[in-house]
Length: 110
Image (tube, rainbow, N blue to C red; front, side, top):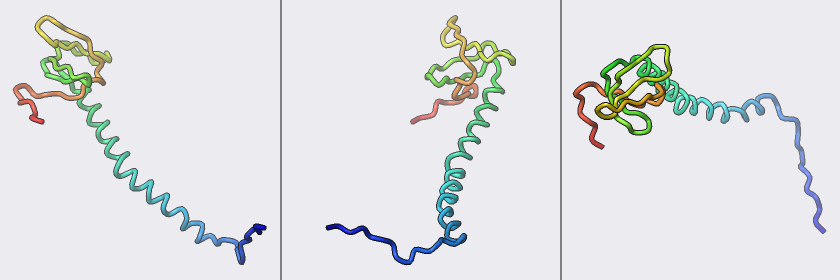
């Protein structure tokens, strides 16, 4: 008892109509680029510069939350040596350093 419905007067879409259908997708991509991708690239560049400029006696915070003082840095090695307590030294992968604190800088209050 149900009859199929057929589209009436459906003609071929023009090129301008097809192009207008892609405008929202282009706008979404542009917004994503400026809100997500570009700031992430900037943070990555800043982090790489920070890790590259690590020096002895810098106080660092790792991504795991360890706070220590850099005791040994080798430019070609992917690791640094960090003293986390008197006479307790550990090797840390450079990319795991999340923050470099300046000597004598106060801890940020949260």
